Each structure stands twice: as C-alpha cells, then as structure tokens.
Image (tube, rainbow, N blue to C red; front, side, top):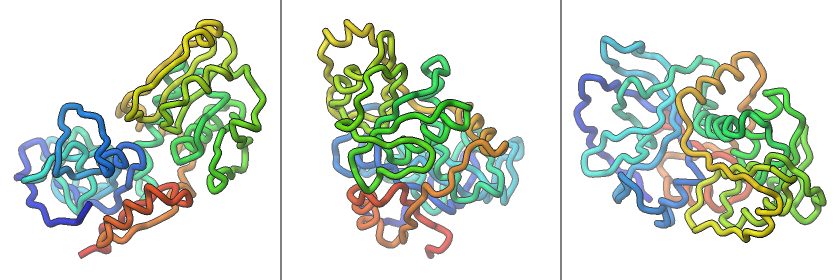
Length: 299
C-alpha cells in the first residue's frame, strides 16, 4: 500500500469532478484487498485504488446535473485513474464520477458522511428481514453499532450485542455480552456483523424456531452449516448484498429528523502521507472503530 501521484482520465460528458475532503478505510473489503485474499469477481486486479467512502465538494459538474460547484457530496467510489483499476477508487485527492452516482449531503453532516456507506449497509440488512428488527447483533465494530443505533431509531427494543473483544465491549443503551455469557436461545432475528465464516452454527444454536439469520459481513472463506440443528429450528437465512441509493437516502432522513446520530464512530484521523502505517493500524488496532483520511490538509 502506497501513496502515488496518478493521472486522472479525462472527464466524460456525464461526469462531475470532485475534490475529496475525507475518505474512510474499510476494515472489511479493503482488509481483504490489503491481505490479497479478496475473492475474484468482475473488476478485480492490481494495482487498485481502494475506497468507497468519501465526502468531497463539487469542483465542476455537467450542466444538466443537479449539482453546482461547492456542493457537498458523498462519493461511493470512482473509476478514473490511468494505469490503475478503480474497482472502489474513492481514496484519492480528486476523482471524476458520473454525476448520477453522487449523493448530495447537508453541510452539517460534514466528515460523518464518510459513514453513510456503512449506515446504508446496516439499514439494508435490517430491511431484508421484512423489517423485523434484530434482537441479537453479533459484532460491535462500526457496523454492529450502526445496526444497534438504527434499531433504536426505528423504535425497536434494545438488542443484545455480542462482542468478545474487551476494547469494543462498551455501550450506553443496550447490553453487550460475549457468546459464552449469553444463555438465551430464542432469538428471532440475528444479524451477523462480525464477518466470521464460522458463525452460522453458533447463530443457529441461539435461534428460536422459524428464526432468521442475516449475514451482513463479507466472508472470504467458505461458510459451512451443520444441517440437523438448522432443520429442527426451521431456520431461515438471508445475505445482505450492497446497499442501494435508496438506503442512503433513508439513513439521511433518519439523521435529519434527529432519530439517528453518527457521532462518536470516527475515532482516528490518519495523515495521508503515511497510508501504509494507517492501513496497518486500522486493521490491527481494536481501539480503531473508523479511521479516515483528511485530504484537504494534504499538499
């Protein structure tokens, strides 16, 4: 992982040029890229510019778009670099992006807008289960915390959260337990935010009959399931894929009416000049919930 000067490809007719202010490090998909363990799928290859969580200001936009110079926007990725793949592509000082992919942001959102992709992912996972709110969330990283906050924002009862890492086992409005200390075995809706490929059997053992497990992480290794317990529980499974723009707008609505806050989830601001060290810390330090780069101060 290194910082390079890259040539931007010329903007085409429908693209906006965006000057990035902040961008986030994803400890899910980007960790797999960093380790070289990301499963193959269309668009994969190296060298690759990572990042799909960026907030910036419009520098120039197509006349027919809804944007004007200076507008604050969320950038879900870009593919605009000569000599490098842009499968994600938002961790850069400037990007060119089709204007229709950009999400307008209220000024008050500021750098918290970097978290919109994760918040939309959490919202998407909840909506999959016929809007049944989770009563157990596995994992208390940023995604797990957003799932818990969204459950409260949607007037649900406080869920139980599992977290085995003591550095992350802290909260204010819901109970955090480890798998070993939680004796309950009748959860109706479990959402896994841990990304642990071994989680299925553990989750099934805690389900009520006809309960459901939603997989909201990204799993690089094969998932396996012992069938008889799932058969006896008549368990159901869902996989939460990528968020949709509608999920981002739903999250923004919850934020605007005061039901959802993204405060306190960005814990570290990294110097752009030390990308290699920043990525390593983001992936290895449990004290890091969300690390972002601040591009405006980089020259």
